Length: 439
Image: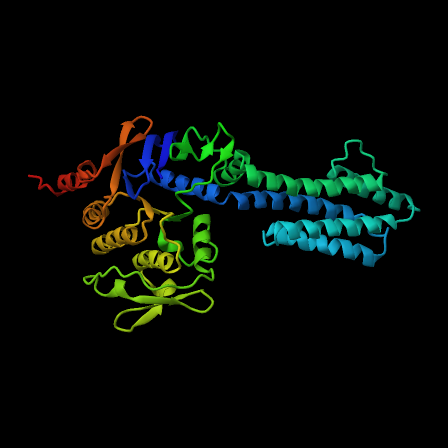
C-alpha cells in the first residue's frame, strides 16, 4: 500500500509530495521545514491510529467538568442532610474528579457505572431532605437545585422538580458516553481537530497538510472521516536522544516512547548488525533493571555502566532502536520517523548508524522517514541500501523558491544525491574564503 505526505503552503513548505514506501530521506538547510514535515506526519498518523483514546480523553474532560459542578452543588447540602450522608456523596465526587483529572480512570463502562451510582446516592439523599426551616437553608437548597438544573440542561428550569432534574442528569451522562461510542464508530474529524488544536494551538487544514494512503486522504473532509491507516499500525518519532529515559519529558512523543519501553512485553535478543570495526562499544549488550528505570550497558570487555547516567548521547541513539527491536515494536507496519539522527554522532558512528537503519529495514520490512543535512548520513544510506536492499532509499531535497518568504519546494531526487552534495558542500567554499592568505 502506498503512503504519501502532501503539503502545500504549510509554514516553510511551499509544496511537497513525499512517498513513504521504504527508506525515505528528506534533506534541506535549517528552516526549510524538515522537522515540520517529520513532526506533523507523526502527529497526524499517531492521532489517526489512536483515535479512540482521543475520544476517551474528551469524555474524561466533560465528566471532569460535570463532577466539579456536582461537587459544588453537593457543598450546598451541608446542614440540610446528616453529615454522614453528605460525606457519602462528596468523597466519591472528589475521588472521581482527581482520577479523571489525571486520566487514570477505569474503563468507560466502569466509569459510567460509578458516576451513575454516585448520582443515585445523591438523589436518594435529596429525597430525604425536609422542607428548609430558615432562609439560609432555603437559599442553600435553591442554589443546589439551580446548579443541578443547569447541569442537567433543564430547558424549563423546573428547579423544584427533583425527579425531573435527576432524570436529566442520568440522561446527560448516558448521552456523553453514547456520543463517544458513536464517535469511535464514525470517527468524525472534529475530535481529531480538538486534539490537534491542543498540541498546535490551531486546527489543521487538511488541504494544506495531509497524509494519503492509496490516494485517499487520512483526514478526509469530503466524508468527514479520519480513516484508520492499514499500511502503518505503529508510528514512532525520534529526535534528540537527550530525552531518552526521562520520567516526564516536555515532549509528548518522548513520554509516549519512554512509556513504551516500560511495558511488560518480552525482551528479545539483540539486533546483530555485525559491525566489527566499531571499536567494540556498539557491540555491547544491555539489560533493564527489574523496575525498568535504568539500563546497564555492558561492553564486550565486561565493563558495565548505567546508560542513562553515564552513556554517551550517541550510544543512546543506537540503544533506542535496539530497544524498539528487542521489545517487538519494529515490524512491517511500523513507520519510524527520525529527525536528524546523525546529531551527537561523530562521522564513524554516523556510518554505523546508517548501516543499522538499513539492516533494520532489511530484516523487519519497516518504513523510515529520515530528515538529515549530513552528507555522511545521506551517502551512507544511499550506498548501503543499494548494496543490502532490493528497494533502494529515495531522497528529496528542499529547494528555496521564494527567497523573500523563505519558502521551499521538496524536489524528488529518486536515488540521486548529487544535488544535495552540491548544496551542502558550499561550506568548503566558505571556509576557503577565510583560509586565503591576504597579500
